[in-house]
Length: 149
Image 1 (cartoon, rainbow, N blue to C red):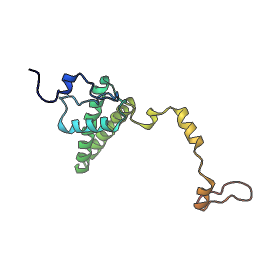
Image 2 (image 1 turned 30 degrees about the vertical axis):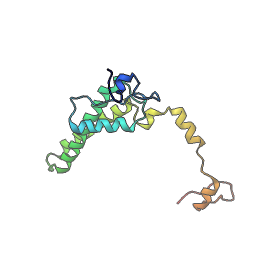
Image 3 (image 1 turned 120 degrees about the horizontal axis):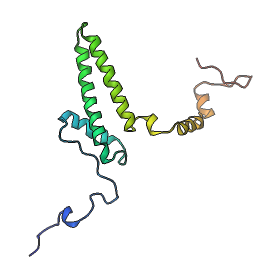
Image 4 (image 1 turned 90 degrees about the vertical axis):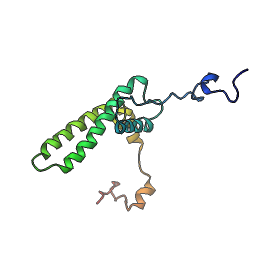
């Protein structure tokens, strides 16, 4: 006699996502609870195809550095005048590491978009004449836009 009731997903042999989306990265077990929450937040806010399985180490490093940065920020706020410069130096170093990891993981706007695309978008962005008039702008007699005050 066969199994009673509904078959499990594994027994059906169905892929977990019918639309072809890959599974989101899972935090490695060596991370603390705080670091795991940061890891999940990073992965959840990125597009589904942003990370591959080989990015787990980089994302976990970013989560660790972010957790350290949060703790260092609290410690710097409580620091005495004698220890504050050392705490601020630590904050600066952790911020540099965090920025480098974000760039490598393509989490910053500069790393997600090429310079040519950004230049095209900036050149294509021109405010409407009606929007400018609503803000009080007017064209002078010489055909130039006046300087905003």
